[in-house]
Image 1 (cartoon, one colour):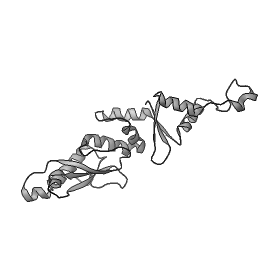
Image 2 (tube, one colour):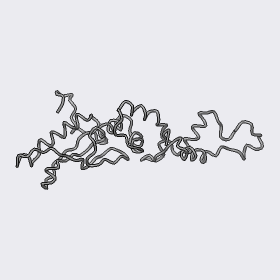
Image 3 (cartoon, one colour):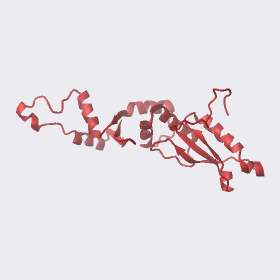
Image 4 (tube, helix red, strand yellow):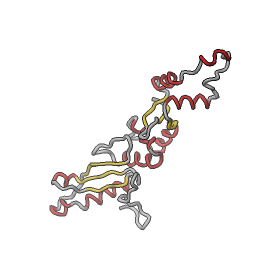
Length: 202
């Protein structure tokens, strides 16, 4: 493991709801032996690689036959929200995703899942997320109503409309927000606890 002392990161110490991965030794798996470990995924790629190396060094197959275990795969994962991890996912990519989830929560996972973000610098990625994330709302219409309120527009009291016509004239927020989504101005994805996350851009 890199680092030393009582404050050194320990990937095996995992928060119950934190992003984590289960990595398994493939040489053991192919020999019919289940050998692997759960690792906290948000401590950085270097710590993850160190944890994987420790797991491989403890391979039962290596101890029995002397062949060094070098290959591994991600056989399970938890705490990554809507993002699916493949068996041979880049550890650097996993670490970036996990760090974002630890920093920003589920909305970051929803944003990540909207497109591939493999090669981006973390600082640029975080800045892009913060610029694009508009918030969590009970519905897309609720977002539209909040946006109109921020613009100083009263939905039921439109300026220039005679008092007698106001009961019959209002902003069609549902159609407006739907057109914003279709036009690529905003994009949305459902939250696991209900409502929607709203982002700039399609």
